Image (cartoon, rainbow, N blue to C red):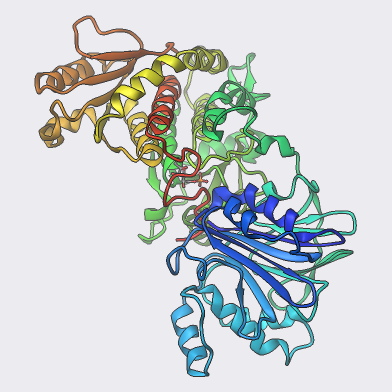
Length: 606
Ligand code: F6R
């Protein structure tokens, strides 16, 4: 949700800012802007993509300090005026902002009553005016920013520059990430390390309430009260190449294709052939603590929530501990009862989804024990939880989640195995799961080989305006994720239903114009699922079945057969063809696959 980048050093800032914004474009891409400082502020901002901004920046846009922004609109439509940076009326102060100022209407009314004329509809512009009002009375930009932020209710990651102080950038964080990058006689800041790794691997994550002053020769960080904080730089083990398309046409196809390797990385060093257990040292939980909770509650948003539903079933099946998943965005608003006998599991690829983070904070405030399943190392959620499992799936750049989804499901299988073997899962069943997990990377490779055929099927089914997705028990979260992928990147309407519920209402929608994608694993529910397929076809509905074998009777128009694993692990494999189906449907419809309309990758607003 909006990307911020800042630079101060000896080099020309604009190319560095533009390159950084390109890396952050997954966070928002409806407008973009940059400002550099050199004898006054020079600004360019446009509605559109970073590439459009780059075209609008003239060759003589010189300055060795600057800030930039790529936007996902909240207050005000995407337009040149609403694009960041926002400037104070005297053009002395420039601000870029990620987050939401909740009391912006009130702040704006006060400023307008004092004669301030606004140029945009954004909440951010209030900040530029407020900082400009205090900067003359205060001894530093840092103090002016801190004073202005005292009146703000809401979330922010901001970067601020002052035309009168051309050697420093002030950044601050509350709820929206800010990472500092430490270079040789130069400093950077950004919403994500993605924008920094081309220049430095030495980073410092700001905490909520912290503020930092960056100058070419170093940085200082301060707590909200103004006291200086001591921060140790971390070395990030991500390479710039991880953020490239690697020769694929889209990041999404690259990330789908990487899954044999990313699943292997999630498993690496964690499977034990001797005791048939999983090694999960990051949980920070001994066997006694592991036995002590009676329930597991999983929270996450969107695809993370659907992978949590797969996780809940794995935990119930393998560990026989009651488990369920709920959207974090709902959980946090319903004043949940926090039970001391429940283990809470928060899932997030980015580690910064605001609803999930807020749910974790609410849980911790009430004394709940929370672990995380997170991809982004050192992210806000990873730092907030009591322990957890890192996915090690590498950066996920495409807005639609794929490799993080499968790795999360694999992490849940490890967690369920771990809990199960501490409880009553037999060594024989433990071995069955360990062996099944080890087979996954090769089996995913097998499914990927069907890419051409799935592309043909996608072209056929993408001609319909609406698709039904069904699955039963283990297949249901897979169907939900399949529908989610299709709608978000192809914009085809898709609805996911438990197969068992079809006849209680939505069967009325079925007919030749609405095909069904049915997830039909070869498990104890196979016959029930085949009966559902019969009911659909009797009503003239076409069926694309994802399963482990062709049904004997002609119950499906098309079948994608995937390799069989253990029944508990099959949902992981059944997901892969649905990712490819959505991808190829989106390509066939000429959609912007990696940056679907209205969306952004890290949802850091409520
Ligand atoms: C769907 C998708 C979203 C995310 C959700 C949570 O493809 O990407 O539904 O899964 O916004 O994001 P994280 O996992 O970063 O918390």
